[in-house]
Length: 112
Image 1 (cartoon, helix red, strand yellow):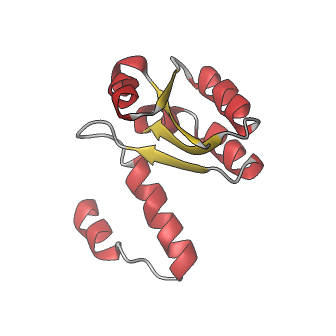
Image 2: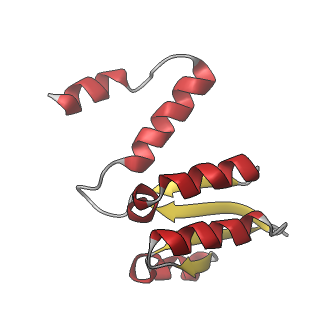
Image 3: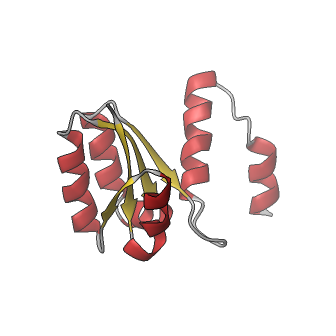
């Protein structure tokens, strides 16, 4: 049976263990790249969530994982005032799949 994993800073991801996620604490971008590589080789992985702060420090590790694996990997925002990495990734994915920018109005409002 496929499992769900969350990767990020231990203090931010510990609560996910209570709802059934396997937690993978990492402390720096090199650890993130190594753990994602190991998860890409695991056939029991069905979903991976990565904290926004860790993903923004190592976008290459995220790209590498996605090129190597078909497992769903989603970046999740963890605090107010973040870099909106998760939101921006979702926006680009919707634009690629539908051919239009559904979030354009919000982008214009946030750039003012």
